[in-house]
Image (cartoon, rainbow, N blue to C red; front, side, top):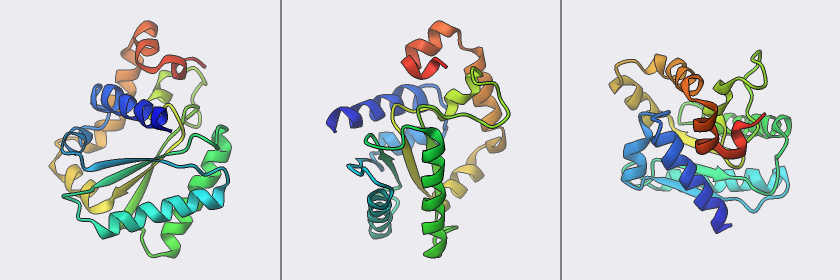
Length: 181
């Protein structure tokens, strides 16, 4: 499991922060306010328990100490459609608990694909990660970061342009097999 955490951390530092895909991530990573947890779950119910544990952990600690959590899921959800189904369950969990508006979920998967785009479009790389990930973010932190950014709404388009501007060799160097489709 340590290898999974290292792979996620490498992706986070070299891709997310290194390519500035999320301009808000660098400070959180540098200040060690991001937690990476590797789930041992092999079934959706166990994974939802892990998600609940991380929500509780975020509830119990101030954002200045722990701002966000990445849950790595190496033992299940290799199929993107199965991952999306579980992601819906996570959203329902937040809704049942009245936590929509407190937390939001970002999604990353090795086979991530945006609807309506060709399978080989480099834009998919903006949400590809070495293993399926569920990213729990504090809504207040996201709102504050967006308010400080001069063009927060332009970030997705800038990221897509950045991915499309990379050469095939650059994409393979950064993403390895994730760049192949």
